[in-house]
Image (cartoon, rainbow over all chains, first blue to last red; front, top):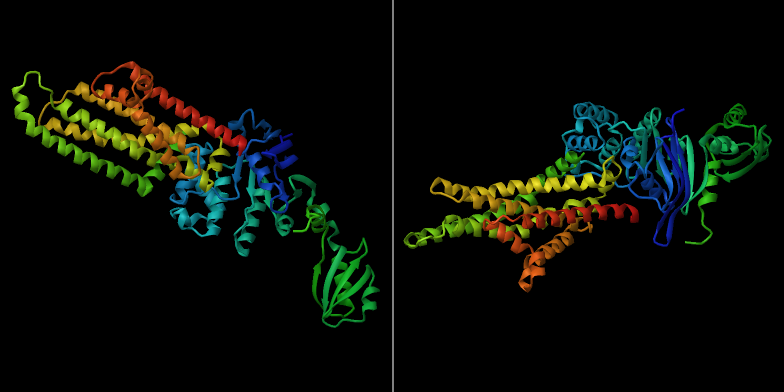
Length: 308
Length: 244
């Protein structure tokens, strides 16, 4: 069996007395997209910096593709691409110069560099921007260059620290497509504080809070109860009791302005309920799922008791 | 890998106006001094001809010219070196190097190589001035070679000191001022007298070399100073990874 791309055990990191990360453990396999979720200051970036070799852990061990990062740092880092929170760009270089430099640093042979650049620029939508100065690019394009430098040498493991911060909604959608595409052949760790992002692309979620791993689970498990609560708006609403008596619905509350909040029975799904509402002729105008398991867990694990 | 680091650094150095301005300023000053010295030499030449065992143009013009170059470059090199690491720290690009399969030693040598290349170009321009005298006269080529050797060693020591101080801070200006301070201190150290200080100071070692006396101890002094600074830089970057 192939070694996990990233494996970490018992990671600790102290800054003086302050413990930024406490006893983190990690596993990342090929073909997997792992979301590292947590509020600001939870220790996500510190964890990722340790995994990338930019910061030495105070305690604990990291293996990249089975190679110990502490003992053989150069060999271990060959299979790694890292996009830090602030993309490491040189504004005075052009995109081509910069990516060529990154390819060289990561040990791509000279005669293969042109091909690697061509490919990575195509993937990140930079094909027409090779000659542009990085300093003159917009924020979205800089972020693309940042991602391009992380994957130019086709690493197995890719670490992305808040890759979508500062992108506009269209760019975020494009970017998610790229991540899913990359996730087929590589292993990706993605940190974010945005729940939707995790739901959109990740297979597995690690939730961090105050330097600790609060919980980890496959995404399906966390979103399974998504049908638990439905929010609907009806064009021709019946009496509230009639909605409550709909098969599959435990209880219904009116939220005013033709809006209702439905609590579903365990075996009911949103689709079935929608069908029943439509066939009752109540003119379904809007249907959204309420709080999901993921959100509930996230809130439960990351809310501090102390007021702000 | 070393070449990748050095190549990128050189490209950035030559793309920034700072390097060009520093090089042109130092060349302007040196050319001015060279012309003044040449003028003086031409004026006293008739009197020299009357003397027995008179000093030649190399001793009167070339040696002091290299002395001036040593002083002017002491001001220039810290400015060229100040951004080497400090700028990478402050812009966050250093994490790119740390997450790449490159050792700290390779990074340091790559940066040092880029500085040496730039200073090599500068040195070439400086040497061209005395060489132009060959068109109209004779030079003591042995002394000239010793001068060049002295300046090469001195410049690499300057560069290594600048590199080290750049690795200590995120602010280039602080790196420049502190490496300038240390270089000047090393230069004036032997003013205090005593054999210890004259061994530790740079000026005595350089002046011996520049006057045409090549002692291996002087060569060793500069190599040790360079090596010490490079080692300290490597140590510094290692601890940076550990302490964040």
